Length: 611
Image (tube, rainbow, N blue to C red; front, side):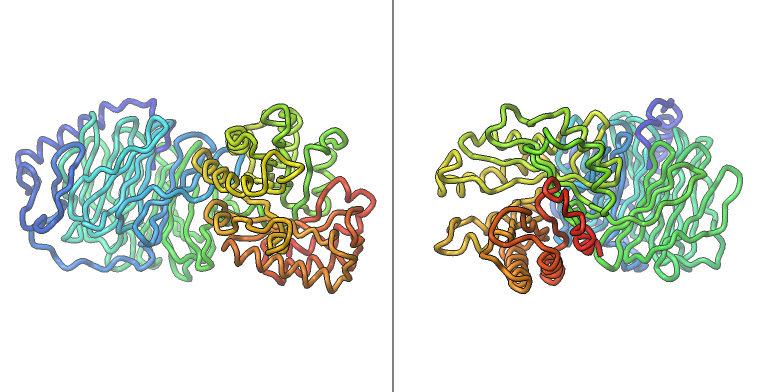
């Protein structure tokens, strides 16, 4: 898939090839009619409005028996990038919707965004310039469907016709240029190009494929397409010098592929091809300018085939694991070393050991030295207050907030920015919360998630109990329309919302649909002089109830040193840790970092949450 920064190269050669291909199709030189259409093949297809040229079919009127695709194909992802440091990951849901996750520079993955559709294959994606993405998939009508992202938003779905028997592949040779490849009904390769603002008719390129194709370009006038053969080996077809060259087997005959390939080019005359091989690990084949290497292993265990993209010379490979996560490995330069496989984890900011810093602590804590102190006991996430409803501005102290964020990320610590709403001014509360999701620090860092601290109402707040409950739901809903960030709802303990207790009527049913994780304030130090065994029972109950009430992952916020009726002692903290783990939470934390001074003996106990 073409890097956005290659857009400065000349595209004259590619446009000339487009024109030549169109002329051949119009004269029937490729064995098709002037339109390439077939009434028999399209018979019974639903009518559809198509933006652009008339739909045409990719194969003959009398379909041959389709060679089965690898079972792993339907779940395969697609990945691209339209700017340095940004990654866009696409999947197809079981209902046929296109799903997107974004990783912005300096941040973690966003939540999953649903882009709709009626799709029957994995997607394919490419970018031809900064701010532009194009995504393709086979629809449930077996036609090619396309959706473009441009000018900061997604355009409507566009039906491009054809009769596909595989997912598509796409490459871009430069700005305004797209080349899409599919398997047609005779199991051969078909090609459709976009140039000069219009789509070509389909071009048949032969071959016999047992998978979806893969395609890449290292610049104008060059295309490389790879397919799995019927004997599960790999073949290549390439376009250069103004013409298509014959199919050639690459990679030998001893390495057998159990998935479709993925292909990318980190530079001129460089190619990387990845596919799942024996043992369901990823295998890599490279062209380094003069010859193909042998297949080498990238490791891992995968349930899907791979996707790959390049940018700034780095190559990223992703695929689904049997454990339900997608994993990514990155080679930063053409001669660099591959990174370990890392999970694409929406909930990573809420996992394992956390600690808390309130805006009230800004005046007494130094970000750099405090973060170094957090790193020593292996804190994984800092929950950092950004403002309260009664703060004078949207960020309590933007300069120091940025220092905390930069220092934490430099130390490998994730950061959840959290805001305390009051709901006397709902627009203010929505604006201040959404601002966390869009904030970029002086060091180019972003918050890993957004937290909404739900704890103010009644006599010490701006609105009544019932008003708070109503506006809380609206707040979460509106924040989700303004940011793609992962949202964590910091909620009361379920006990506190039981009938007769302080927060009866809490809108639990709205919390799960409007957040990705919940952080119950299971502040056991405020219980009535609980023993360690009572702490365990109560915290475990709050943990399991919070998960049941919301259906979301749970990070548990524990007691407060020096506050409440139950002393914070080592045996009680151990009971808290055991309850968090036994209750199925993904992480836990003691509130807060400032009060841990003098109680450093508790950190090794809390570190068990990283197990």
